[in-house]
Image 1 (spheres, helix red, strand yellow):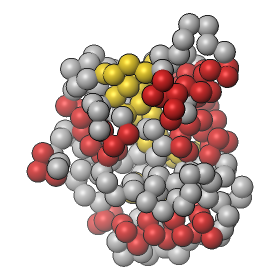
Image 2 (cartoon, helix red, strand yellow):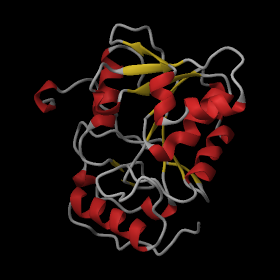
Image 3 (cartoon, rainbow, N blue to C red):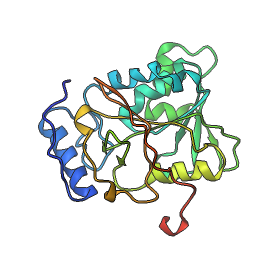
Image 4 (cartoon, rainbow, N blue to C red):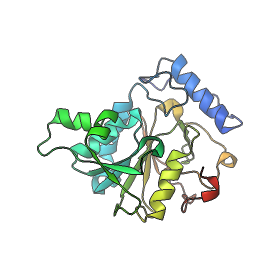
Length: 233
């Protein structure tokens, strides 16, 4: 899948940007299952290719424990972590039943079983829960995005789960200030985002992987320092 037509920049709010991205992915034929992509971290044609770029990153090679969100476009990232025999943590969708699951493939798992472990059903079938008191030490965080800028500003689907999960990891001592954050998107999701649209609880990213590019953002904006309870329902 090529980059597609560039999206118009200069959207005035996060919702404008989200709507434009979702609409563009559907209209350009780049959207992939599950559809419609509206309201989701969108899956896109070429997501597997983009996920494969993760293996090229030094920060991935060095990482022992990797947290990858449960979104469909990140399935290839979960698979890459399992194939590289890293500890894979996946947040519980919508944080409904606890925080993380550690994916534990059966001993001697075949390629096919590892592939299954990386799917949403596999995350349910092959995982053990990790609580807030768990001794997780996450070396790399992989999040989905609806839109992201080359400066590292990120817009999620609007429910704040990635920001909240990161804040929880800060609170439990599982991530440090320099723990790298990677997002994986289609080229058309890389947009100019005005810094004034960012809130203090918004998670920024250090690397952006697309089917055609690896972007290091060198983002200096501090990441969330912990849970902002006044923002939590």
